[in-house]
Length: 552
Image (cartoon, rainbow, N blue to C red):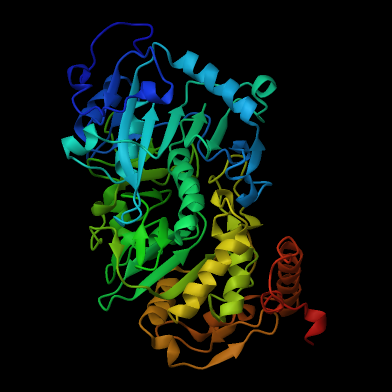
């Protein structure tokens, strides 16, 4: 900002008060203008509004617009290929190789661009368990991105701790810095590039804050495996008896909504580790989809959208009254709220528990409308479905998605963020399921009565009742049928759920059409799993679905 204009901003005089002795010059950033170190929420509010980055809306939240990027730039992610890590990385669609020479060249241009710039720094931690927490430095160009870092990660108010802070990984989030596809070897002028050797990530030319949290998640997904910690793209909560439940699923499948249960305490809503100690949150906050959020159905998350400390991304508001309209999708379907996890009632303040999961839930949004609303999996089926990661990409969660959901397979229910081969993660999960005698459920939060556009989305009330029955052990008392294509067990009854709901074919007008569609889905599973068969046991391969022609 002051590269061009010299004037004080609200927090100018306090910019260096909480600075680390390990300054940015140690990370190659020199000749900077003011650097604002570890500003608290209030100061960042003032800076964001003063710089015209954000508006304050009714209730006290700040509202920002992320411009052309309203979702992750999934096709613009790269990992630097270097000797220390390349053998353990799953190279391909999600981990595109980037050369060391291009990285050095790019860093040189970035360092030159940054000269004279004002930057914001937050020194935070990723990982709530003291044994595994990682010091992370988030360097941002925007004040509101610095507030986002404070919301999403674990902070400290200890001045001595901040003074002596040395990061193990640094994220440079610089939306004003554009890469050049010709010069830098990128796909576009936007890029997210991770370098494990230099412990640095670059996020260039995107304002979408989700890139910051997902970059840190990607880093942890790789590094924590060396410490025998299973990193998981899941939400987690715990009952009064210490029974942990994990909820795996992509954005838009209900992970955040379903884990925010007033009868259970929330550990976290998106990213966790499962160690020999128990389960711990990677973050200190939540990043929830809020499009068409209802106070009736999702009161806890809804309340966060109307209070001080929350960042609302791309939500429409009335500039006169400052009322927000959570139903308006004119900007994007992927409207978001970032808020500290303690805004949710019944949260585990420490962010970790010393008990292990009793229930593991795979949330799939079946846009074809054929899967049962809940099914119980064997350990081998659990491994198969974890590797497959079947779901649908919901409108707005990635650049290029339209209104209609896209059937997809996202390995480990978080393929874009998994650095190792999916089989590595599945083996770690299977070991823990067997060791702690956890029950695995496949829960469909998608459509019934037909595909998208024909049927309707499964009632959240029915989904909650099914989950409650599973978590409370009531589904252990009912009879099951074996699904003839997928082989998993489907309950014949469930308290407070109509029996017809448990038979998806009954909601279709034409049952022949239903079985054709179900068979087509089974074919998609079989074809997708060919990518992973090498290295999988025969038991896991056999746990997949059978074609209709082979079971009649």
